[in-house]
Length: 247
Image 1: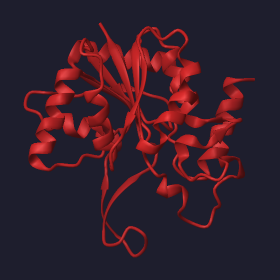
Image 2 (image 1 turned 45 degrees about the vertical axis):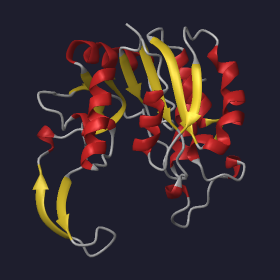
Image 3 (image 1 turned 90 degrees about the vertical axis):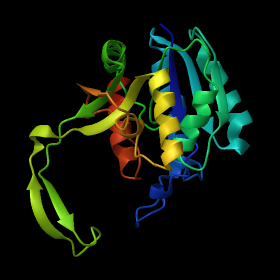
């Protein structure tokens, strides 16, 4: 079984620019969160290290902006020790969906399963990787998710202000999707072909696969530590988690 990991990392990190909270000084002048420094090294490097450390991973494909390919390849090459296959850096697209599609085209032809993971989730645990991969091997498609702890409201109107509550949604059948999301490679390719044909844009890979007939996506329980670093305030939590992982 050959497992490839795709890390879409071509985003501009616009949410890091919003609001009044400044981008942390250690970002070295960049708002692109995948390259912000966490304890002196880019977040992307920390994420790559987690998957290199997994004995299940054969190949890693990182999708970045075309102008970043060469220097990102130089940045990540030293991290590949122990990886059975290659670490490839390819040109992403204008969206996450396009970036993943470009990375899919670059996979080793012998790839059986592919895991797509947010480049800015550097605290994924090796055991979580193992469990979601095992579930995908059994069922063809599996994602990581956590149970919401807050009460969820359905609203109408502008959510930024002035929204009106229309109902309270039971949490019994809800999960908050995380990554990695793991699929048989033929399933994910078929999902992308269908999305292209229908001009459909999903919020994650699972939303594309869910549209296929007779395909069910399994969920395994993740961890609240598997945070997605999206906003400036997330860096404070990231430093805390990092300090706990590296006492």
